[in-house]
Length: 90
Image (cartoon, rainbow, N blue to C red; front, top):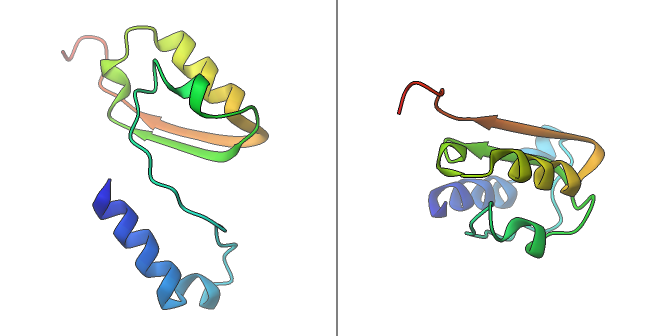
């Protein structure tokens, strides 16, 4: 997570997103939490326009509730982008 934060912060400071005319986030707050237990407590409805979850959902016991929590915190036209290992791969 620290590496991702450093990359994003560097691109903000370098002016790259300005040159590409990309809407920039007003604030980046890195958080480490258990998405299964802490997500619903930590974030409110419609708080995000994008949620990216890469290769951690295969550790979740209650996948349906976790995905519902993600959906609840997305804006109506928000995007969830996730990846996980398949059922027979573990």
